[in-house]
Amino acid sequence: MDFIELDRQELNIICALLDLALELSTENDIRASLSRIRNFLKKVDNFDENVDNSGEISEIDHKMDFKKEYENGPENRKSSRMLSKNDASIVRYSINVYEMLRRGRYESLKEKYGIDIMDDVDKSWMKKAEAIIPDELYDAGYLKRLSKSLKNSFKEVKTPSRKLYISDLHFFHDNLCKRMDNRPFLDHQEMNEHMIKVWNENVTKKDEVYILGDFSIAKGKATNEILSQLAGKKYLVIGNHDYFLEDKEFDTSLFQWIKPYAEIGDNGRRVVLSHYPIFCYNGQYRKKPDGQTITYMLYGHVHDTHDEQLVNQFIEITKQTKVMSEGLTEPAPIPCNMINCFCMFSDYIPLTLDEWIVVDAQRREKIRQEMQ
Image (cartoon, one colour):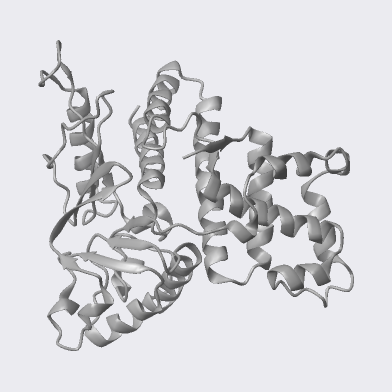
C-alpha cells in the first residue's frame, strides 16, 4: 500500500479541515471516516510532539524505539505522520468542501455533497474557512498543491472494512460512574447515549468490531436494543459480566459469533483475543524474517485498576528479560505485545490495531514517567 507523508504544518491544517468537514457532513460513513482519521492524526501528533519536546535523553531513546517499532509495522510506514491512499481520499473530500466554502459556492456544496448551508446569509461558514488557512498561504496555491498530492477523488472513495477492538463498555452499569472507573457521566443513561454516539461517529457498517467482554450488564431485551443501534459487524469475546447471554430473550444473531477466546489475522499479524490478560500467549515468540514480532495479545477485564498496574509491571519485566531462542546467536528480549483495550483509554471509540499500538505506547510511557 502506498503512503503520503505529511509535515507538521500539513498535519495541523489537515486536522482543521477534517474538523470543518465533520461539522458539515451528514452521511454516516463519511462522518465515521473523517472522525477516525482526525482522531488518529491528532493522537499521533501528540505522541510526536512529546518526543520532540522531551528533555530526557533516555525518554527520547525509549520513545524513538517505539516509533521505530511502529514505523516498521505491517504497512512499512516511514513516518508516523503518513496517510494511506484510502485516508488521503477522505482528506481530499475535506479539501473540496473547504474550497467550496472559501469561495462561497454554497449551491455547489449542496448539489455535490448534500451539505445544505443555504441559510448562511452572513457567510459565517466562509469566514470560518478563511480563518483556517492564511490568505498569503492560500493565494500562493498551497491547498491546490496539497490536494494534488493526495491522489484519488471523492467519487473514487471506497471505505475499506477495518478490524476494530474495544473492551469493557459496561452498558447500563451505573456504579462505574460513581466508583472504580469514575466515568464522567451522571448515570448509565447519559453514558449509554454518549457511547452509542461516539461509536457510530467512528464505525461504519462495513467494519468488524471485536468486543473483548463485559459489553452490558442489562438483560437480553435491553442489550438487544443497544446492539441494534451500533454500526458494524460485531463479535463478542465473553466477559465475566455478560449475563445477558443466559437470557432467552437475547438475540444471539446480533453478533457474528460469540466465543470465550479467539485468534484472528489482521494485516499480516496474529491477534489473540481474550477478556482476561494472558501473560504467556500463543505465538508470543513468532517473528518475521526481519525479526519483527507478529503476534499481539489484546485483553480487557482489569480496566485501569491496580490489576492493570501489575500487568504493566509484568510487561516491563518481560521485555527486559533476555533469553535464547531458536535462530538466535545471543539472548534477546522476550517479545510482549499485550494491549489493554479498555474503552476509557480510547474515549469509548473502537480502534484499529495500529491505533491501539499508538494509544498503548503513549499510556505506558506516561506510566514510566510518573514512576521516575
